[in-house]
Amino acid sequence: MLVPNLTWLVIEDAYKTNDLVEDVLKKSGLKYEYMIAPMPAQYKNKTKGPKPRGVSNRNKGLSWIRENAKTGVFYFADDDNTYDLELFNEIRYTKKVSLFPVGLITKAGVSSPIVKNGVFSGFYDGWIGGRKFAVDMAGFAVSVEFLKRRPKATMPFKPGFEEDGFLKSLAPFEPKEAELLATNCTKILVWHTQTKKNEPSLPLDLTKYNNSNLLMLKKILV
Ligand SMILES: *[C@@H]1O[C@H](CO)[C@@H](O)[C@H](O)[C@H]1NC(C)=O
Image: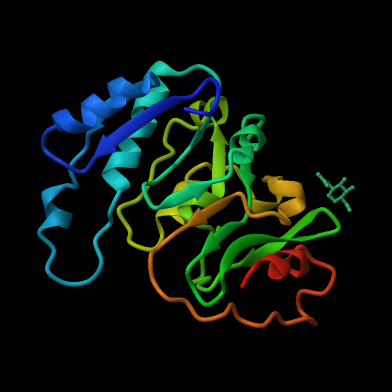
């Protein structure tokens, strides 16, 4: 409600919408679309391993954007994120894909592009996992026009690789082309939160991360 010119797509992994949620959305006065996108049964009925949660919802949002939006920037918000209002001013000018740090309740304490002298130089994340784009779901925003020039871009039903798979599906697009926000990734404007105890963040490898934004980020982590 504090962000100007926002359309909120609320998409639930459910078979029907919920009147109580709809009431809240109406009351907010926001421009919104309330939709459902249940996880396909083949994944929902899996008995072993992690499920690809939130993928059906996000792909539904991407389809809505392709059909209904011409310009603007989209961002995958979530109910376990906390935002600094400044984030929305920053992502608003994204031309292709913008990247920025996300505060996390993990040993690393943050997931962020590594930035040296204003230039992208890799990803810092507690789990790189062979990903080309080792980012959190809350750590990037995409231009609508850029998406629409890539009709096949979609999020894969692949637990742990949803962000990487989606950003790779935006090819041709390389990490070094990303717009680095939050003052060269030295500020945390979004947190992926959980209510639980967390160890102090890991000490930083000062040889490896010398002259990088991580020195600044480390100062604001506990
Ligand atoms: C990012 O760093 C580069 C190189 O030091 C600098 O020229 C640029 O002004 C910085 N950008 C911001 C937004 O601070």
